[in-house]
Image (cartoon, rainbow, N blue to C red; front, side, top):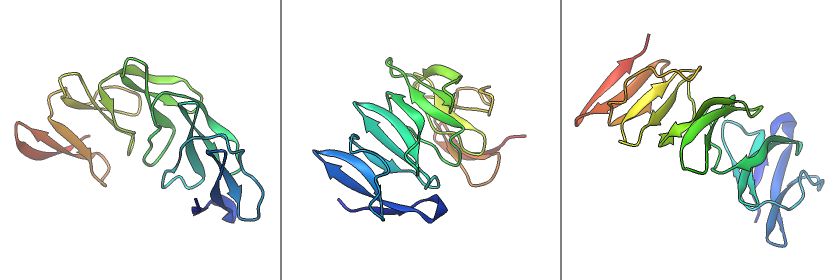
Length: 171
């Protein structure tokens, strides 16, 4: 399996497979990691982070092979523009958010949670209604929307409610 990604500091690496496990190796042949991982994913725009699984747990390491998120997460790690907050899922299939140190920002309590984007996270409850959290974990809207999606504009969101679409601008 040959995949080549440019990393920070003008480094690039390839995935290599040994005994059905995956690892990373720099173009110059020096190993970044041992081949002990099951899956890998490069999440853009974080080209200097690699998200992988080991023994069924998700984690991440940087371009030098240093683990930056321990392999303890039950669900794949998602992030959009920052990984200062990551979406996590607990055993009861509820989602919340942690920071990189492992400190809980929002305890797992939502049926679904999207990664934070422009300092907001979109969450849904068990009735499949959506709301939004600010950077501190406080709800910004009631759980009444059928859908909420991010826009590229700061504090502007697209919403659906009772079959109608609209735009919300947060103050």
